Structure formats: C-alpha cells, structure tokens
Image 1: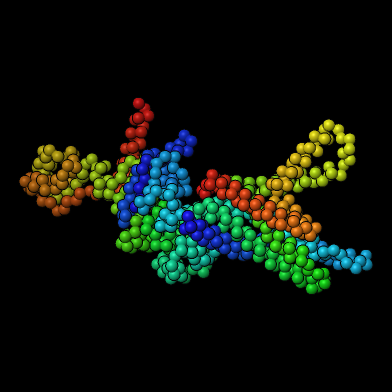
Image 2 (image 1 turned 90 degrees about the horizontal axis):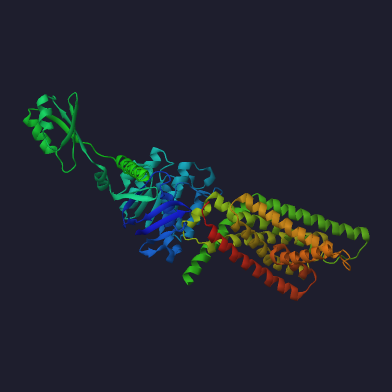
Length: 314
Length: 277
C-alpha cells in the first residue's frame, strides 16, 4: 500500500530524514511516532509530493508517486495537525467543494452522512471561520473521508479535541479500520496510537529506530520482567527460596507484596508459584507488569540518544 | 494525457468558481466598482457640461474615455488581486490543503487565473449595464467601438491578471507581493512619463549626457512596452479609439500571447517555490 526506499531529505547541512524504509500493508493501521522535530511531518510531506526527497523513492498503491501524482493523491485522505480551511465558506460549501474536487458520487448524501457521524450536521450552514478548533479538526476529518480513500494519512488527528471528541474520532478510525481502510497515523498521544494502531515505527532525528507490532516493540525494550505477588504473609523462608532461583535478578517487598524482577527468556510464573508454595507461602494474586507504548517509546529514543552521545564522545 | 487534461480542467474550473464566489462576496469588489463608476460618471457629466457650455453639437465618442477609465481602474484592482492570490493562499495554508488532493501547479495557476478573469467579466457586465443606463440618460450613443472595446478589454484584462499572478508566484509573503507590484507599477509609469517628457524636448543638438539618457530611456521604454501589462491595455484601447482593425486584432493576439507566456512563467516559478509556507 505504502512503501519507501532509502527516503532521505536534507536541508543544506540538516538531515531531516535519513534512509527511511517504510512498509505499510493494506488494511493495517500504522503508527508513526517520534518526538518534535524527528522528521515525521517532513516524511508525510514527501509522501504527499509536497516536498521533494533528496534521495529515495516512494510507492503508493504499487505505483511510484512521481508517475501520476494527481491520480494517486485522489486515493488518499489527509488530515494534518493544523487545519487550514476557507473561513469564508460554510461547512457545507467547503465539503461540497472538496467533494467535487475528488469527484464524489452523490456528494450531498455522503456529506450529510459524515457530518452526522461527527455530530456537525446541525452546524453545516455555519461559516467555518466561526468553528472551534475541535470542530475544525472534525471537519477536516470529514473532508479526508469524503471520497472514501483507500489510505488515510493523519497527523495528530486528536490533538485539538476534548475527551468526547477524541472518543468520537477514535471510534471513527476503528469503524473505518473494520471496513478495511489503511491508516498511517502520526501522533504524540501514545495512548491513542496504542488503542488504534497495529504496527508502529519510531523515528528520531530522521532515523527509523524501531518498527514492529506493539508486542514486538515492547519485547525489544524489555530487559527485565517485573512481577508483583501478593501473599498472605511474606516470610524469610519465601524470600530465601525465591532468591535461590537462577532467573530472579532482584527481589523486594513491602507489607505483604513481593516485587520480583526476572530475565525475559520465558514466563516464570509457574516456577515462582511452586517456589512460594514450597516455602509455605500462600499466594493471593500475581501480576506481570505490562510495558506501555510510552515506556517503549521513551526507552527506544533515550537509548538512541545515549548511543548518539557515546558516538559523539568517541 | 487526455485524462490528465480532463482532470486539470476539472480542478481549474472548481478552483476558479470557488474563488469567484469568494471574490463576489468580498468587500473590496463593490468598493472598486463604485469608485470606477463614480469616476466614469464624473467624466460623463463633464462631457455633458462641455456640450452645454460650449454649445457644441457633438463630442466624438463621449462614452469611450469614461469606459476606458473604468477598464483601467478595474484592471488595476484585478492585477493587485492577482498579485495577492497565490501568496495569500500559501500564507493561509489553504493551498497546502488543496495540494493534498488531485491538484497540481498547472491546474492551480490556471484556476486562479480564470477566477480573476471571470471576476472581470462579471464586472464588465455591470459596467455595460452602467453605460447603457448612462446612454439612456445622456442620449450619448453606444457605438460599435464601445462593443469592440468591451471584447478587447477581456483579453487585455487577461494580460493584466496574468501579470498579477506572476508577481504572486515569485514572492514569498503577502507584503512582498504588494510592494513588488506597486514598485513595478511606479517604475513602469516613471519610465513612460520620462519618455514622453523627453519627446517634448528639442533634441536637435543634444549634449553627450542627454543623448545617452535618451538612448537609455528609449531602450527602457521599449522593455516596458513588452513587459508592462498596462502598455498592452493602452495600446489596445488606442487601437479602438483610432478604429484601426489591424491594430485591434494585433492587440488581441499580443495580449493573449503575453498572458500565456506569463502563465507559463508563473507555473515554472510556482513549481520551484513549492506549496508549503
């Protein structure tokens, strides 16, 4: 669906994007993560043909972007962070203009349907200039969906929305996902990426540091697994038994809770249970700490920073 | 190729109609029209007064010069509007949103060009109504030349608009476009006025300095006659005034070529400049 090969963008001495190889499959939702200035927007601009790559190639729908950009872009829907709208038009006029631009069949029906989905139908005759930031964001999402695009490129799609609006947009994304739409979402709101994306790429200083599905990405950064075990009572016998296990790296406790750090080679919960039982302990609950995407993101970017610093000091 | 042309034409048409609607809703257009009509009304009233005072029986083409003045004022307004067209769209970011979709530089430039040309045609219709009313009130006849001037003014306005759009395509900010447009207008006018002034000086025995100045100004005058859209406008309207069919047709052709060349140049510079702010 979307593929880049050796995509590079340089502005004089600054390398905004370096040798980027992306591969977004049909029907998947790809999260593109990175701190500010990482090269996300530059990448999106190159994907849309608004910035010329210094090197590299882009394929969309199996076709090189430069071969027929007008026809290719007709199959994409785009919502970027800042909403640039024609303030002097009503929402209906605005959407109707874009519906005609994309040659949407039966535009009135499609516009009504989408405006109702984002609860803007009652405001369709208001001038866009009078819309709030959140309403503008939703209007842009409607614009991007008008022509039923095969690929949606979204940059911070929920950044301007209140929690209710975020849920509306998330539900819209999930609905469209269910219809087989492909998404390329760039966002800082990692919790949203985690809820909507099936695969994630992390870009930092123009370099793609990691790319995997959620579990794979978390596994990459997980050096230790932490378990929290609630016991009826923490006794010396229990801690001694556990400390003798070869996979236990460290052990701590507070009141009746034990915090056990192990390596990540396998799931050690059965061995831990057996050891506690052998020491005469009674387990009330046991939980493995889940690593969030945020943890993974911070770890990957920080690791990279320390690597870069080390290289610079050499 | 055919599909590309169809797509471009479709996009250009939509961009121009959207812009036309915005232009007609805007506050500046009624102001420009009112100013132009007031100016023409003053000239027409002057002609009526002249008839009464001097006991003349007839004035040659009493509506022609007032009409020319309206064309000049509206063309100036459109040239300025054209100069702001692209640069403002880029400044507002709305251009970027357009280019997310099936829009390219060619369709965009032609769309903005036709938008302003349609705006001129809309204003021309109102101008014709104004002059028909003036003719009814003053009993000054509407001549064939008036209609010839109307037709020619569309082509001349096309040149003027293309010039404005060219300015817009080479500038980065709105203020730069306005300043560049005004500076060029003043420069063109200055050169033409100097050239006319030199024509009135006795140059039978000029000093070396004056001879050089005359040469330089004559050369610059020639350049301006090629580059300035208003020299095409003057030339065309002069052809109407002189009732010269050959000059009239030549003016049509020259204005069309001028507009096309500038459109090509605008597309070239626009592609180089890019869409983003």
